[in-house]
Length: 335
Image 1 (tube, rainbow, N blue to C red):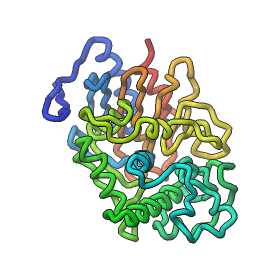
Image 2 (image 1 turned 180 degrees about the vertical axis):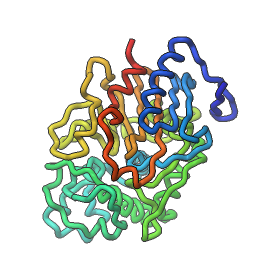
Image 3 (image 1 turned 120 degrees about the vertical axis):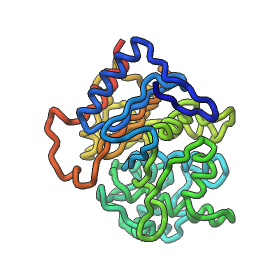
């Protein structure tokens, strides 16, 4: 029997016959696609916890772009603390943007929604300074462009905001103090760029249990251990569809159809069965099909991780082994 520690209490997995069957089906789907961990919590209690590919409950696995969702949570904490406003111009913090006709209009909200107008290449992460210096190729709010550069610009915004407030300017130090430690997340390992600053588009590694703690924090609208760590309305803003891409909020994916002409959209199919996939589902997603799903209406937090190496991304994936968020979730959600 698997145990999951919540605070100081050890809770045994509650494997009711119905959940046992769903757990087995979801794990089989995941394991056939390089799956390493599967953890499902219902109302905070584990109902499924399985491991494969040499992983166990202590294995921290890289989230790849699942890391981006932390930038949204970082922003929510900063708004709660009065460090920034989502709709303030980025140029208020980056004066080098003020005289650029496009950059001068972009807001922090648009930056986090990947619709500020800043292009970048997936897998090629600039330093904070390089991202700030990159030119725009679209008007703010007009085009969804998924990639690492906007998150790195936000890292520089946070660095300067923290310094101006007389705080330690490292964004990761702030994230750890404000959220990760209060949530009991102890496994986080974070890669840093050539500038020594934490990567915000990718680079975080967590155990399945610690990623689930983050999901529970989202499900409970910013509360943990009876404390409201971030403003609930600000947190909810992360999960509203952005104008340029209804399938994306602020660093979190949503189960809506989208006409956005971005190649990443083609790999997301959460909208395919709207009658079965709840509308309030939100998702953090990374390469290798790293997934954190939060479904408040079902009181569910679901973590799925895979063991992959960077070299795996260059190999074509047979159609039979391709990941479908909808097909995976239907193993869990079907009546």
